[in-house]
Length: 257
Image 1 (tube, rainbow, N blue to C red):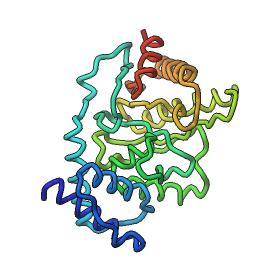
Image 2: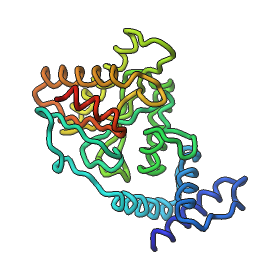
Image 3: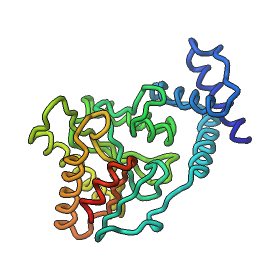
């Protein structure tokens, strides 16, 4: 099957799962088809799918990732000992684990084509990621606490694992507790990565998007927490600070020299 044929199959399957959308026409334009498919991924509740669907979905998403271009850790140059700075799409980064800035439900973003990293990661990983997260949360029986972390497989992402952490939400002035919770996010991810013997972790800019943590203050906390952890733990993972915006790149470049 071509990518176009795979996309059409996936869209039809997901539309049939939603009775109110079953008769929705499929757009002709490729980009509109991609937006519809991503939207259907985003709104789908966690649940199993047929083996055929999963095989076609996996082949489709892996080819999409390949077309975007995969960035390997080996192609990056450290800016400090065991620390890298990289600007790009975290869903195309091949390392041991990437960090997802999740919400407390830990099920991904349900808003169609939303611009948050949670949405991007779940969209690129496939429906299996939401199902595994749902299983974790069913066992936990409570929302994910701010500052802690969970690990899942990465499915169709080029990394091996995803570390999910919930950062603090800022509703005004940043408090000392907010700063401590954000630091805990980085520490919890590093501790979990170390427990799984992972060699590399890519951090996004936790809490700085929809959660409104000031970018420069968040970056200082991130860098300091990573430095402290690596200093105390000789075998700690290498860390990639992943940024998407030019402004964040400049902040981290200044902090990391």
